[in-house]
Amino acid sequence: MRIDRDGSLRVCTPGGEIVRSPDGQWRKCPQTAGASVSKPRPEEICSTTWNGVPWAATPEGLRFKRGSVWSAVQLPKSSGSHVSALLPRGDTLWAAFYGDGLWSFDGKSWTKLDIGLPPAAREITATASTGKLVWVGTRREGVWEYDGSGWLQRLQPDEPYDHNCQALAMYGGTLYMSTLQDGIASLTPDGWRHTAAPEISSNSPRQMVEFEDLLYLRHSNGVIDAFDGSKWTRGVSSALPRKQASCLAADGSRLYVGQWGGWSEFDGERWAHHLNLSGLQGVPVTAICPDGGRPWIGTQGKGLALVERASGAIQWQDERSGLPDDWIRCIEVSRGQVFAGTFVGGLAMRDAAKWNVCPTPRTEEITGLAAEPDGSLIVATRSGVWKRGADGETHRVGPSGLEAQALCPVSGGLWVGARTGLHFFPSTGR
View (cartoon, rainbow, N blue to C red):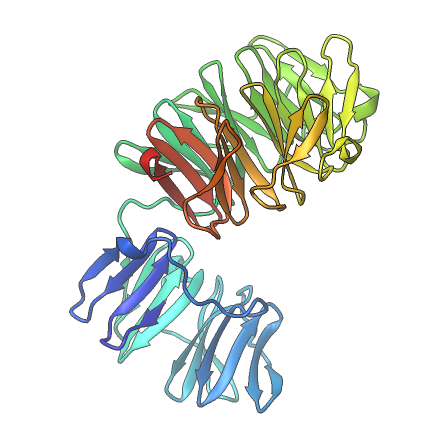
């Protein structure tokens, strides 16, 4: 958030940049959507200059710099978690304490600002001012404007409740997005809808898969819910011997639920449990990929297990087999070719009994894989999205630096969920 020379307020949001002109009109700037803004150094949350002196807030507190020496400032007894924004206001420095509100510092002591800041506006992430007008930006309640007498909320129309996308799924013609800690956002024909606890089991949903006309949702606490298009049923995983579900997968005949040391399968009527295989005992299961009668089981630290369901025999694939890393993040089969996304080793492709590291994208964390009908593979990473054609040719989708976390190919394009936003790339643009 900043003030331009002409007095306009410029606000950077996950959905793009919005500008308030001096005459009070708000407009969105689609040409700058997704554009980055200057950021403080990695150790800083926010910084400013007050009375000619640099000030910076870090997770450890607030400090100022004289010459080459940084000195700490004693903070007030605030219920806020940290200093999240700084705003010079003449003879005082205003500081936002995240979750609490605004405080004023005169160089010696702190005073809680009694200016009627609404409770909904106290998760402050940015501040700006010009003349008597003050603006605060919040994590999920938009921009608030203060004119000296009262507060006015400025919300952009039709935005999801949170922009930290953890997973995406298309179900019944509606796009569902699980967020970091704000429940489910769904894009309906009438706009965005928000679903949270207690309607679902937690506000930290993670993975989603569709099986037999139901959408199954795994939460960070290991609980699984199911959705039939109109109603959520909580805790459908109560029949599992081990309550902490770690991953989901589905094919035409089974729902797969990864658990510590194995997995369970549901055929629509009854559960079958594969939790006593000696090779998997004590192993964290991170991903499952059904591949006919032999599911691939991804693990944290032990590589891939190819399991013969009938006999329980396991073929282990690890760094000795050519995998670049034994921590598997995701697995996908594209036209019979098995791909494994790793935590730090990039993307690997299985050729007969050998694994080869794909040169592009470069060695890094693979956060998601999605196969498309034409034989291409979409690859999500912490620094962008790539499309690998059936011929092995690979090119980038969208901008570089996009911290992608979820993929959802649809007819006509690709939805990409990132840490700070949701993006759609038409087929013609990728």
